[in-house]
Amino acid sequence: MNKVISTDGTPIAYDRTGAGPAVILIGGGPTDRSMNAPVADLLAGGFTVYNYDRRGRGESGDTAPYAVERELEDLRALIAEAGGTAMVYGTSGGGFLAIRAAAHGLPITKLALWEVPYILPGTRPAVPAGYRDQQFALREQSRYGDMLELFFLEAVLMPEEVVAGMKASPFWEGMGGTAPALAYDAELAGDFALPAEQLAALTVPTIVIDGETIPWVSAAAEAIATALPDARRHTLTGQPHNVDPAAIAPALAEFFAA
Image 1: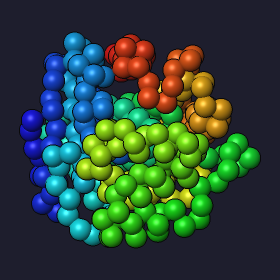
Image 2: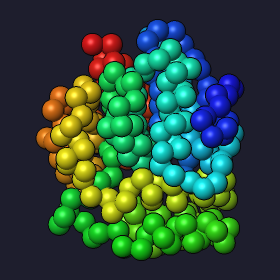
Image 3: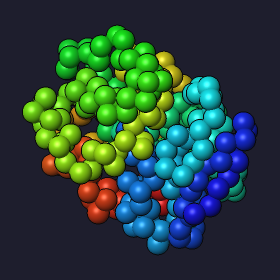
Image 4: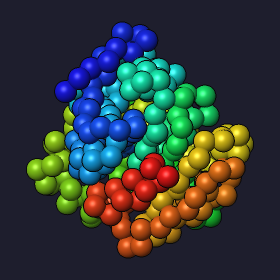
């Protein structure tokens, strides 16, 4: 495990594996870098992979107050550590940050996105307007289990009985350590609307990948690719949102090596 220091002094923890062009992995949701570790291992044969804990997750620090700009600075510091430019893979909510970073002119040479959960009107019920504020309020009260429940019920749209079963399982408590960062993803997501103008201004070559198992997520993937000036679409048919690393790694490797 290595650390790089962000602009505001926050230590950002990362693992570096492999050799070759730099690829940075960005996770989302109530996870730390362990979620992307299998993908990092599979890419390490052809790339130098930087798999990091976003601030407030895992072994990275967290300096108040939160702002999206601080996360952009974290990523910029990691890109500098990687040699000044990098290719980036953003998975799920990590895609919000990856897109924002590319739009802000960070030196990203290629961008890969897996099922970024923007919501198109009419494809599913909207996330409640107060979702972001609720997450920050629950975070202030250290009600991390309630943050997880709100995320799965309102953002992910899991059925109540499924969430109840998750709460009874051992891994629920394990997610508590990353739950506070759900407020940060909520800040990045805003109203979850597709940022069409922002996407249209991006010139970074991008691959947009989905698994075609969640219709509203696939609709978002299609809209993202349509809005981007330089995009490829790829579908890993039958893959769930928690995509199999062995399924997505070859698609990423082919795109990054091209």
